[in-house]
Length: 246
Image (cartoon, rainbow, N blue to C red):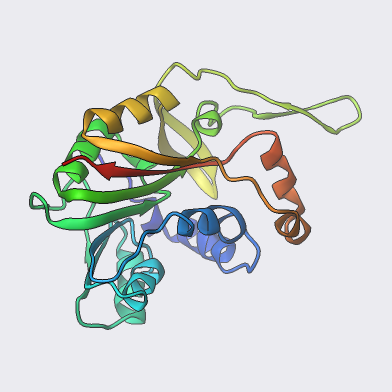
């Protein structure tokens, strides 16, 4: 069963509180590095997988995209996107990527921010995405870093006798599959995959990797949010850009 945690009232309230903070991990770390890999959007047809409230999809339209389709499994997210943005050729639909009907060679660019670690069958979804891309199309996505997802649900940061952080525990890295953790609510499920599995899945689906980023915070970002200092010890996010082979 596909998880739709963002329609859990308690979870969504907590998530909203985090995202509404000016200084958070998304705004200071994931988003700027993700946006740095966006190609020229003028005249492009784009799919935003896990579009949330539609901010990125709307930004794509502002930057010259011909059409943007945004999908999200969450009713809450799609309702907000439709409420916030009303433009021709900007479409939002409640759907999981596993269920969304895609035509071959339909999109020039497909993007997905912090969604695919919730997908159980990564290989099937990547193949589906690849088939929906036009030759030379761009696939850009971010996920939680495999170093981080490996040990979800267990103690991760170990402190020394003085109470200072000693090290981050990397455990069960080669044991791929479901991870359950407490994040705002109990039993939030995501899926751990090794770096090799992620990279080889892209290669096997005719996607040529162009860039990999493991975001490092700027000094300014750390000043705004001091907990970002830990990113120098273990990465939270993995961002990849790939191109569809002809």
